[in-house]
Length: 430
Ligand code: GUN
Ligand code: ZN
Image (cartoon, rainbow, N blue to C red; front, side, top):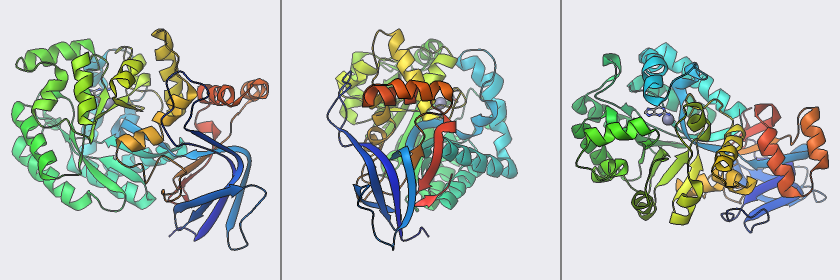
């Protein structure tokens, strides 16, 4: 159990509303320099100015000059792919065959899955990520071990067994009946237990038969409250392949929509190659895109049009997409997102990026009361950060003028070395 009363002193930063695109001084940014964040029984109870410390019955931690933010939320990441992060060369479809599928095949083994889950979640926490939507593998044991490890750490985690019954190596394919049985069992065992939630996890349209996509849709309909996660329009060769496999569909997104997989708990990774009708359908359904810029650059997939999605009313969160992405750090992910927008002639503010990785993701996941902010009542998933580590960053921070300039330099230069402490539900875990 967490200590009854804990107070953390530092510079508190969170969001009370979505910041406007391109505005370096928008409404919705809540910066409270030198405050005590009060935590009672694992939940945030409020905040008071630094010169008004709470009483002796509070366990106090002082972090002078440090930033205190809600833990980051990674809305798209593959736990077993930590083993193939930074694998040399090739675009999506070839990268899957060459590096990814062989790595995932190892997770049929319980010991591999168990050790991998622990290593993955500890690494997430060490990077300041306290919640995630995760793809393990097609193997049931990869899901059980991941949920067990998240439960042991008190983490808010969303995950599910990968569904794939074609176009993959034989050791990685399931079949419709067996997959339906396993998913139903996993939902019963894990969904809504502690801070865990199940996601019907279609790998992507090309690796599921029409029969399996229909089954996935049935799972979503039968179990209201479960999430749905998959990949969407990441790479041009992939989009062409989907058009060949599903000639009846209007678009890649329509393959999912026709199978009842487009709803307000859907998380679609990438969504680079969409048109205005797709974005309207995503917005109408209340679905979100997990933009994964590190992966998009590493695999050469394309440049996501963030602004078109915002303008269409689509929620955009951020995914590391390790191992297509090359870092678990959401700060590295934000820095890559900025560069993707720069290549499009747009500028991503630190506010839009930080919001996407905290309150924005929480909101889109329908978890805004629990994670993503420092609001009273939220679970105390909180990370403490050094703004500058090393002489280059320290000099830059000293010369920065204004809050946005400071935080933009932090976002651009920082990584896991800047993490001081990570608190999960009021317990220090990293
Ligand atoms: N599309 C289907 N599977 C994958 C995967 O594992 N990673 C990425 N980035 N895209 C995918
Ligand atoms: Zn992915």
